[in-house]
Length: 328
View 1 (tube, helix red, strand yellow):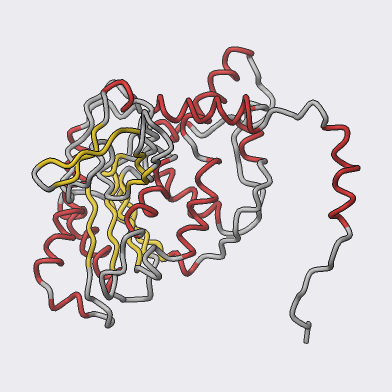
View 2 (cartoon, rainbow, N blue to C red):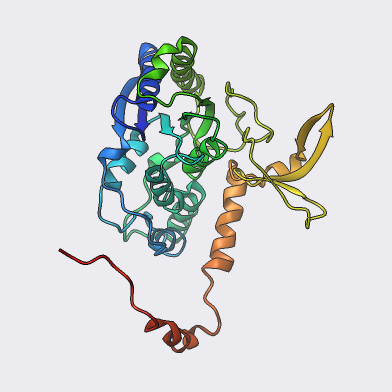
């Protein structure tokens, strides 16, 4: 069993300290551990070229990203791990921009539903050319998220971190939010936080040890979650978007996308989701397959007027040149 730690912070900063403490907890229960510091990698932004999605949904191929940088390195580390400890400092209420780049690159190319569709079509049609999807995409993984900030400007941190692993179908078994640790190393003076991080790493391993069947499935009971219970009953997020124009579903979880209603009971807001609606959540395969169908049948469906596109583009093609810094 292998547990990977990804730290998005400075060397020996508070984030790295907590990620390492969690890895120590995992190692104490017999796991092989490894640490990657995301800032050491050269990761370029996603260009939105759709090559990975087309590869998976139209060519029944591997979905490999075509951008040449260090993405292959971190992709392989994530594919070979069984558990993940993901830690990030909080900048402007969210995780680091580099983690968002990784999330954008992993999102479509590693959407497990897209990969299942690619595999199924490939097998049904007997396709032997090209590269098939990585079989490791279909094993269950458990993850813990650790967000570390200097104040309470933190509302987008854990939700965005959870989104960074949602497409790979990892089970989020713990989430830790740490505030008021602005100075490097200051978390070491908070014994309860250090112990909490170690417990998180241990829980990732304990969760994996309980899973005899490691294949991804909606039929299996979801693993125990030990973090703070959020308002969403599906993914434990606290981030809910209000949609007053929708009379049937005036609220939606900003992380897992499940729709429901809000009620105030004993001065506490409750987000209520029916069992039927819960399976539309993006944390379930059923919700991911819905998204795949939407992309294939709507977003990637050629417009019947596609032949007119070059002419329509002419208006914008030569309008303004890009402002760039002078090359020295």
